[in-house]
Image (cartoon, rainbow, N blue to C red; front, top):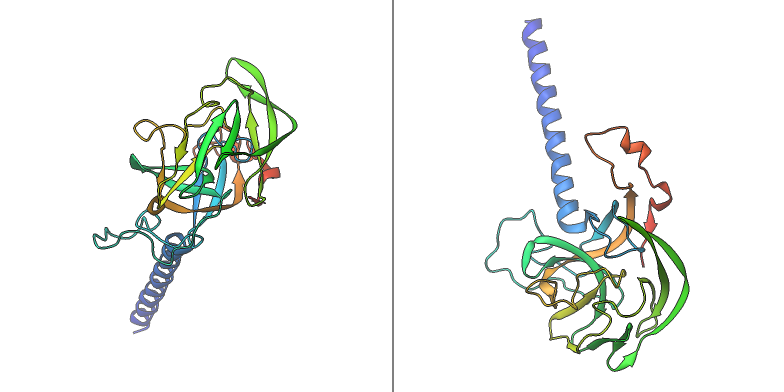
Amino acid sequence: MSMMVAIRKETHGLATTARQFAGMLALVFVVFTLVGQPYYVPSGSMKSTLLVGDHLLVSKFSYGFSRHSLPYLPPLPLFSGRIFGREPERGDIVVFKLPRDPSETYVKRLIGLPGDRLQMKNDLLYINDQPVKDVPVGRIKVNTPGFPETAMKVRETLPGGKTINIQDFGPNNELDNTGVYTVPAGYYFMMGDNRDDSIDSRVPMEYGVGFVPAENLVGKAQVIMFSWYPGASLFKPWTWFTKLRPSRFFHGLQ
């Protein structure tokens, strides 16, 4: 009899543990689906705001929800556009699905709103035919494979008053002079803070980003939660400590 009681207690304990584990999984599912999602920065197109190895917390509810921001739900053929949608603001750091290949996720700065006209002329950004005020604020050493470079750190003041810092290698680069881009209704224009090394909305959708539909927005990047230097690996536990960038932990983004 005592053995049967012990077995019942053990079975009950396992069932309780299983329910607790299932509850934790359900909570993680809800949080990642509706509230926030981690995102790893794989490229340097947003330097020096974001670095390779930064791990971001992306707010889902900032812009409402679309099928692209709810990746863990089954396909919903009747669900298009956004629900509980909120308009993003110029200057937001946005995580979005690449229009030509939604399996790829990008992070850029939102520069152009629907109806805006944008152009690069002689390394200067124009929005609605007005030059964006930019002021050099220092220099940045850039570790480029093969040889070191120095870039200029420039502070831009966007329409509406928001200031951002960009990285610029000077005039006469490929995207320093462009035609005029007119942003269609329901779309946005994205640019990298690393202006001379960013495949963004200045590059046509066929081989770049192009205009980004509102539906493709995943969320707003809010915080750098953790950061590691390149070379850190899950399969090399010692690099979890030797490659840490603690100065970037819990760093809020603007």
